[in-house]
Length: 604
Image (cartoon, rainbow, N blue to C red; front, top):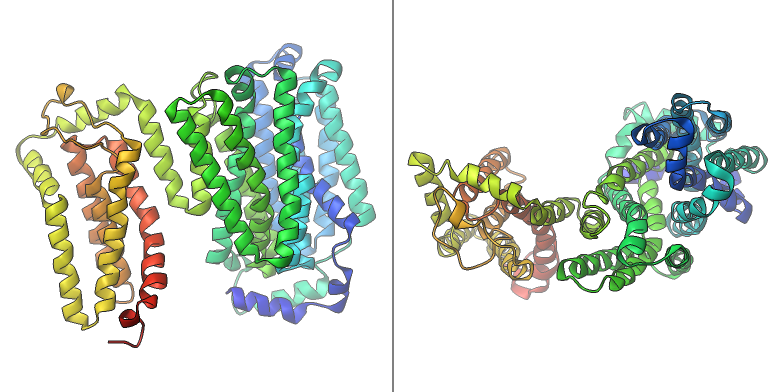
């Protein structure tokens, strides 16, 4: 699909479009368009208490003004993106900017909270046009390294907005109040409309749209292009990397002020330093992509973000001095400059025939995740950074492998569940009677280490015997082993205790090692993944998938009913294996095995 759309784009590209290029003025305007909505999201947050008093509204009602705006931005991108694919970039952009200006006027003059909520909804809806179409315009005019450079430079303007807005709002709330802050948003909206009219020219010309429409008659809706795995992968990278930044922004006031003890000036300096890091690394990213692969620069950024969030989580768990938390936050936020622009370029580059719709999905995920993570980071109150560590780490890991985020969330949240988690173990362990108890115990023993190794060896031997080829047998066994064995190392690092046998109704013999990850659930999950991969092109594939899911569920309930693991640990162990096994297979089967002489394709 990517090849086809690339061919389409090459076919319909015109000299005019190529010569137009991305000028500095255009790039600045596109940065402004992408910055208005994020800026309007956070600028007025420090004025919430003031709004509650002046409007005579509850805190919940005032919070709805933010929720309405985020809903509007999310919905607006899904509306204006496809419209720009159909009618061109400029008409929807002008319409959106005009709606944003009118809604901003209504917000400034709002006499009550109801009108303000409605105005903010429309403000978000109109402002979304600038965000979604600015990305599509770049995708129209550039591809590959040129697009990556443009997106990285645009991040200097658009990406810093959500970082700077809360700081600026805090400084201006006292002097100008919440209506003054919303007046600033109105001013930006007016500038946006003027800039669109003065600078933006149509980049998705009618002949382009007609050619694409003709091409799609045989292949169906343009939205089919969005099924591209490449697009979905890079979109997930972008969305969850942005979630790392939103988690940081939402938690930064209590982290820097309540925990670290910075005053207003200190908080502003720390916040500004991180913003400068993001800007500086975005500039560096634009330079790096000129001489290095975009994917390589993106990979470097993801590794740095992940390493920073892991370091942050370890500092939180270890109880290190809170001042140290500022260091991994600095590197995490700065490293996003290598990620956001490049992920955007690669995602939109994968589906050039539907750049507007693709940009809409990208933006909707961005703001949808922002709405999700913002309240999560404050769950634990203002005296702990654990929720922030959980959310940032989860989002960073999802940017690498989506399922791995669920691992981190479930595992670390399991640490905070306390008596609730133990209560689940007690309830399930109460079922450990009669046939259920005997069956769960049998399952536990059958896939204990020694029997599990024996089962794996037997299956490897059968595969070798049936195929007369050592490679699929070693691919199967290696995938299981390399997924399973590291779980024992992780177990010692995490050192998660098992359920307290003293409070269990039917306690299992005490196990000497820690409880997460569960070796039993990691093993059965890795076994199922390896088996499905082995049978993926045979008629047995669906049966293996069905029976594999059943086997994983059975083992999950067995170890939970035996109460040798907390249910959250067992669930997270399954997800851990699902995230690790595919990567293991790529390294083991696709990279290492072909480098072994007697395992290369074509050898016996």
